[in-house]
Length: 181
Image (cartoon, rainbow, N blue to C red; front, side):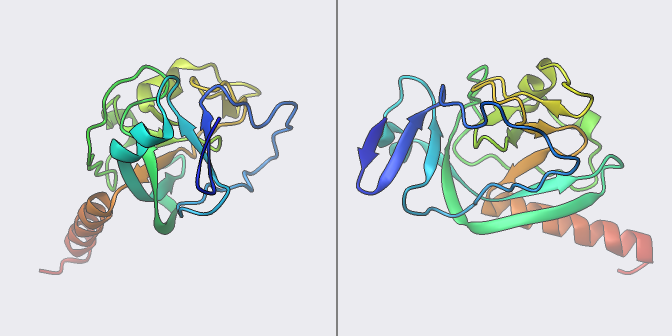
């Protein structure tokens, strides 16, 4: 662990939920704000300084239900995450825009970033490479947190550009459905 000011940087091997018990509905959320004493998932071998110099700031995540309808969006001031999948190291790029509104989960690209309750960001392919435990939860491929991803309620990360693109697409869908121009 490396300390930088008041920030705590934890290598991805940190396991947050040892012995945790899954609830019927997820009650946790991941903060999308940069705060004091916050833990950050950092790829093994990467320093806090390297993450600061090479990161993507996500301001929100979208959660869709089993019918691919938006369940909710959790927003914040923004928080840095590594630009690579912490599971397979696929590069998400400096400013990925993932338009997820109106796109069924099985049609989303396999390299779409997905946030876990463990604070690791892995690609959709890595999420689905992990077994479904208890019929409800998938562990994180990076840190092995057994309750990182709830089936049917994945958290898709969003930069400000992603939020704008999703809002634009949602308006277009709404106008088409309602016959507006």
